[in-house]
Structure formats: C-alpha cells, structure tokens
Amino acid sequence: MTDAIKTAAKQDFKTLLAGMAINVPKVGEVIKGKIISVDRGEVRLDVAGVTTGVVRGRELFVESREYAGLKAGDEAEATVVDLENENGEMELSFRIAGYQRAWDSMKKWMKDGLTIKAKVVSANKGGLMMRVDALSGFMPVSQLSPDHYPRVTGGDKNRILDKLREMQGKEFEVKVIDVDEKEEKLIVSERAVWEDSQKAVLEAYKIGDIVTGEISALTSFGAFVKFGDGLEGLIHISEIAWQRIDHPKDVLKVGDNVKAQIIQLDHSKIYLSIKRLVDDPWKKVKDKYKMNDKVTGKIIKVEPFGLMIALDKEIHGLAHISELSDDPIANINDKFKLGQELEFEVVSVEPAEHRLGLKVAGVKGKLKKEDKKDEKKEEAKEESKAE
Image (cartoon, rainbow, N blue to C red; front, side):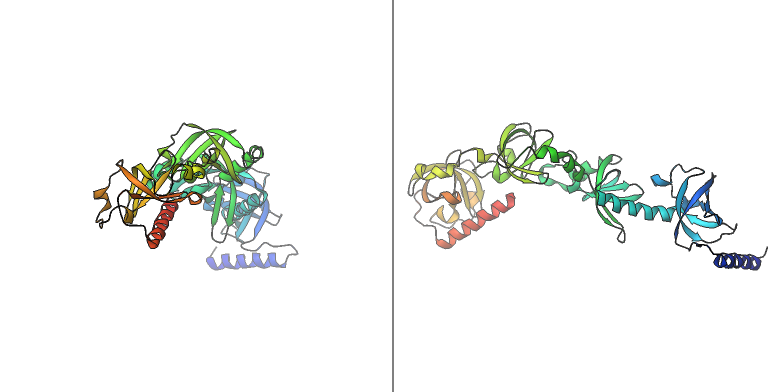
C-alpha cells in the first residue's frame, strides 16, 4: 500500500468516526478503556467499543503505582496521542495521563492531609530531592522531623550536606504541603507528619509547666532538650542563664539532665527556659554592688569596645574602653588578657537592664554619654549575634 493510499485510508477512517453518532476522543484527551491484552511491552485497550488503542514504548509510564501490574480486564486511563497509527490503532499514552494523574493525586493528598511515602533520591545544601509516586519533589531541611534534622555544631553547611547525603535511598512518611503543577513544584514535609503525631501529646502540656529532660544537642543559638513521650524543646541561649554566655557548651553538655519551664508553645515547636526556674540575681544586685564600690573582677571577654568582667558567678559587668586608662589605648588586646584579675570601681548599676558599669580603679576619666550609648549599641550587637 502506497503512502498516498495509507493517507487516504486514514482520512476516510477519521471521516467515518466524525460521521458516527458517538463521542469521538480528541488528541490530548484522557479516555478510559478496558485492557484487552498486555504483551511484549505493549498494552491494548478497548476504547468505547469503537476502536482498539495501544500503549507502547516510552508511553507505558510504568513508574507510577497506578500503572504497575495491569492485566486483561482492568480499566485504565490513557491520553490520546493519535487517532490512528500505522496499524490502524489509536495511539495512546499512559505517560501523559499518568503524569497528569500524579499531579491530581498530589493536589488531593494535600487537600485531604494524607500521609504518603516518599524516597530520598539525592541531597543538596537546602534539603532532599524526593521521589513522590511518579513525580520529583523536594523536602527542605526545615521540614525534616527532629529525629532526622541534621544538627551540626557551628552550622557548618558542608557537614550538614554530608548528613543529608547519608539519607539517600531512605523512605520517609511525608505530607504534601505545596503543589504548583505549572511550575512543576512539589514540596513535602516529614515534620508535618511528626507534628500530627505529637498533637495529642502536646495537649497534655501548657505554658508554665516544668519538665525534666536530657540535653540532646547544642548549637550556637541554644540547647535542645528531649523530654516526655518523644518531645523535644529548644532553650535559646538567652534562656539558659541570667549571666551572658558565649556558647551553651560553656554551661551545658549533651547528656545532662535538666529541669526547664515551658515558656512558649507554637504548634509543634516548644520553647523552654532554665533560667526562669532560678531567681533573677539582678533583682538584688544593689544589695551587693553600689556606686563607687571597689571590687575585684576577672576578665572573661575582651572586645574592641571594652572588657566583660565576672564579679561573681552570677553578675557580670562591662568596663568600657574609655574607662580602662587615662591614656589612649592603641590595642586593647595588648594591655588586657583573658583570666586577668584587676581591681575595678562600680560606675553604674542598672538592674532592670541587667547592666553594671565598671572602670579600672584609679582611672580618672569618666564614661561620657556618647560612650555609654556606644556601649549599649555594642551590647545589643552581641545579643543579636547570639540569636
């Protein structure tokens, strides 16, 4: 049969279909059909008793659960690729229909809040690339459950990436939290599943409750505590002790048993405080230290703007650089060292702000107003670094 005859026959078939009083599928339309046979990489369907459709080659799209294990008699959906191929059969695709079906499923799963399984394919510094049914998805690091969240001292991104790569090949239970078919964006969350499992447990706690737990991890911004039935809370560095600390490891270590108070419940996020279980020592600071008192203190931190001084275990003061010498100081580190003990004089006491100002005993210069403002600015910077 010549190409011209084939073309004419094809046109005659299309004309015949168009003239029949039936709903003829169009190219691109998704149709339902009953499987006639599954043989040698080809699946044939009966299309409304009108014609036979065939799915073959790359159009099989067997990666989706819905298209695996098809057999004669089963119903299946497919997309019309061509009304008639070289063998007179309707050319169909599971790949296109399956792709659309997969996106539709994702939207439904997100709407219904269903838990599904997803496999880790690879990792980058932002999170995990996931295989979700037949689609590619992404799970940001923030959406991992506490059990899988990669806590790394110092927040080293390369070490975080190493920990994420260790998860490759693992399967997680997740929820779909964002679907954008047009942008082919699919975001899933393991944390959302964990949050659901914790709701009943969390209902047993309220703000102000005191819990006992174990330090499970330390970071630059705080300490994590495991307590109760698989719960975990965060003690921010500012809630560990009344005095300032550079790092939680200065006063805590992993494995320590601690008591803490719940100060905030934000869905599954639990914030705790150790220091609020201890009386604020600054409430009585004026009973211990008064203006012009001579005191002995140890240098615990040297900064360009001055010295942090430990007067006792609870009260730390600041000696501004303008209060360290009557002569200009070229390099503060050349003149003062960590651990050095000196005699100071109290120049200000501000209990409400947890501030106590000092000057090196014998120094005549007095802290100027503009210096005091600079001092508070620098202290604020230090606090923001800790956060």
